[in-house]
Length: 122
Image 1 (cartoon, one colour):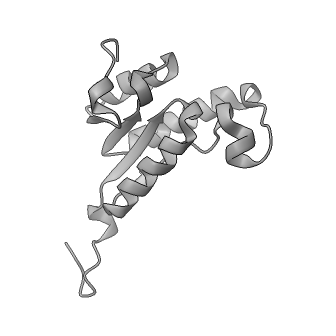
Image 2 (cartoon, helix red, strand yellow):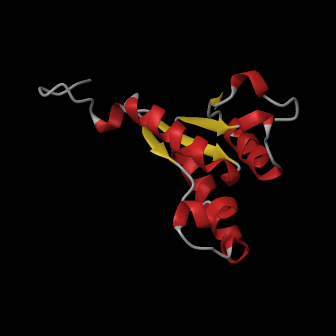
Image 3 (cartoon, rainbow, N blue to C red):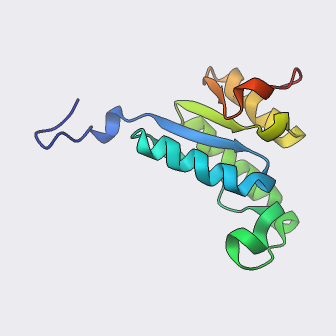
């Protein structure tokens, strides 16, 4: 429902969580842009471990924080109405597969950034 200004109420906005390998930083940025322009609230990864120098301007010891970051991302999935998997070139690694399985177990719909390259094991 829109208010008098024509703005959609926050409670009615779709929340989309982006999942995928952080090596595809540019595709995360593009997906975030596309979903935001559709009026969706976008939850994404906060640390691009594979591309830390490019994305954050410095290296980050992701392994030190991996367990906490993985748990944080699962919480983001649980908050979402939908998951958008960044599956560039059909790549879906083991962490992303686990996130997709988690979303499916909770009945959260899955969408694919590259719908022509959905891997059989995802």
